[in-house]
Amino acid sequence: MSTIANQPISLLPEVQAFLKRPKRLFINNAFVEPASGKTMPTEDPATGGVLDHIPAGDATDIDAAVRAARAAFEGEWRAMSPTQRAACMFKLADLIEQHAEEFAEIESLDVGKTITSARAIDVPFTVFLWRYYAGWATKLYGKTLDLSLPPGGAFFSYVRREPVGVVGCIIPWNYPLAQVSFKIAPALAAGCTTVVKPAEQASLANLRLAELIAEAGFPPGVVNIVTGLGESAGAALAEHPDVNKISFTGSTAVGKLIMQAAGRSNLKRLTLELGGKSPTIIFDDADMAEAIPTAAAAIFNNSGQVCNAGSRLYVQRRSFDRVLEGVVEYAQKLRIGIGLDESTQLGPLVTSEQKRRVLSYMDQGLRSGAKLVIGGPDVLQDVPGNFVAPSIFTNTTPEMSIVREEIFGPVLVAMPFDDPDEIAPVANQTHYGLAATIFTRDISRAHTLAARLNAGAVWINCFGVFDPNLPFGGFKQSGMGREFSQEGVEAFTELKAVTVKL
Ligand code: NAI
Ligand code: MG
Image (tube, rainbow, N blue to C red; front, side, top):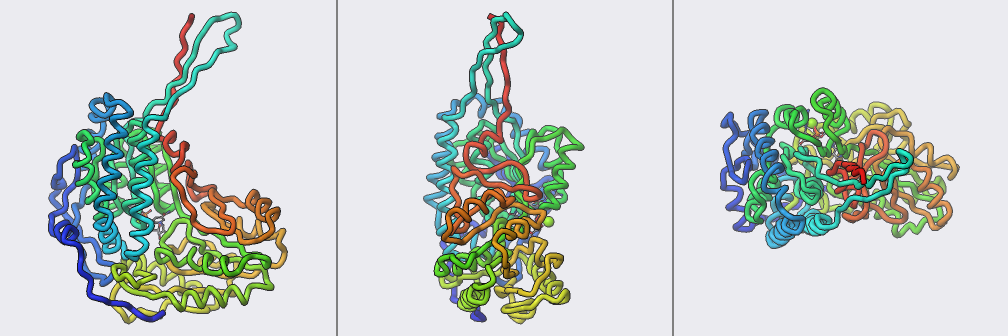
C-alpha cells in the first residue's frame, strides 16, 4: 500500500501544447480575457505545486456570458431544427472521441485520478452520453388531448414541450469532463443554451472542451464557459435574473445556497445533484467473491471522491470479520501513486484543501473512539502531493461525524448488523439518499429491501452501474430532480398548454 509509483511520464504533444496555451474564458465562441484581467493558480494534485493558471472570471464575465446565451437562445440556436442541433452534438461526440487520450491525460493531471480510470470511464462514458442525448434532440414531443370542461364546449388542446431557456451549469471537480457533459448535453438537446461555471479546482478539461465546441459548429453563445471561484462567478450565475435554470452538482451546503439564490432572484428551475453517504449492505448468503472486492472498489475508486461512493459498509454479523479482512486486503494491495502512472490504482486527492478535510474527518473519528483498522491520518503524510491512504474504521456509533457526513475521500466505516429486518432503518439513518448497494442471493430479500431504502439508485449484487438511459439523482438532501434518461432531458423543458375553440 505504501508504494508511491513515480515513473517518468511523458505527456502527449497535444496536452503539452494545451498546457502552454494561455487559458481564456469562452464567450460567444471567442476566447477572451476576464474583465478583471485576473488569473488564479490551479493545483497539481501529484505534487501540491501549481499546474496551470486559469482565468478568475467574476460577475461581469458571467453577465456577458448570459447575454451571449440569451441572444443564441432567442436567435440562431432556436431557429435550428432538432436534426441540425443533433448534428452539432454528434460532431462534438466524434471530436471528444478523437481526442480521447488527450482528455484522459488532462483529467488525470488536473484531478489526480488514475489514467486507467479516466480512459475506461470518464472519456468513453462522456462520448456515449453525447450521442445518447444527440438522439433525444429529435425525439422530444408534446401531447394532444380532448377537454371535458367546460361542458358542451368544443375545444382542442395540445401541450408543447419547450426549452426552459438559458441554463447555468455549475460543475464539480471529481469528473469535470463527464459532469459538464451531463448538464450541457441534455440542455442542448432540449434546445436550451448554457453558461458553464467549471470547478475552480479542475477546470482544464472544460476549457479544452470549449475548443472542440468551437470546432463542432455550434453557433456562438450556445455554450459559454466562465472559470472562476464559486463564491464569485458561481454565485453570480445562481443570482442572475436572466438565467432560467441552474443545474448543479456539488455539496449539499452549496446546493442550499443555490436554492436560496433562486428564491431571491427569479425562481429559477433547479436540478441539484448533491452529496451522499451511501450504504453497502452484505448479507451472510452473498457471493463473497463478488461482494468483497465490489464493496472495496465502491469506496476506493477515484480515491473516494464520488458522490455515490459506498462509504458505509454494513455486514451481517457472522460474515463481518471475513468481509472486513477481505476489504482490508484489497486496500493493502492498492498501488498508490500519481494518476498518470499506468500502474497506479489509487491517486492523490484533488487539492491539499480536500486532503486536509479528509484527514480532519479521520482525526474526529479517532477522537470520538472509532477503531482504525488500516490507513489513517498519519500514513503517507511525509510524501509530497495530496495522498491519503485507504482507511477503514470500525467500532463506530451512528452519531460520529465519520458515519454521518460525506468525507469524499478513501475512508470507509464498517459495521456489523444482526437482524436483516432492521437494516433498512439503519441504512436510511442519514440525511442523504443518493445510492445503496445490496449483496444477497435471496431475490425476495433483495427486492423487498430495495423498495425500503431511501435512495435514488439501488444496486443489487453490483455497484456503480450507470447508463445515460437510467435516471440518476437523490432522495432527501442528496438533491432534487434527475440527470440522464428522458427525465434528464425533460428537466430542461417547460410545458405549454395551448387551447383552441373549435
Ligand atoms: P462545492 O459544492 O463548494 O463546489 C461545487 C461547485 O459549486 C464548484 O463549481 C464551485 O465553484 C461552486 N460553488 C461553490 N460555492 C458556490 C456558491 N456560493 N454559489 C454558486 N456556486 C458555488 O464543493 P467543494 O467545495 O468542491 O467540495 C466540498 C465537498 O462537497 C466535498 O468534500 C464533497 O463532500 C462535496 N462534493 C460533492 C460532489 C458530488 O458529486 N455530489 C462533488 C464535489 C463536492
Ligand atoms: Mg466549496
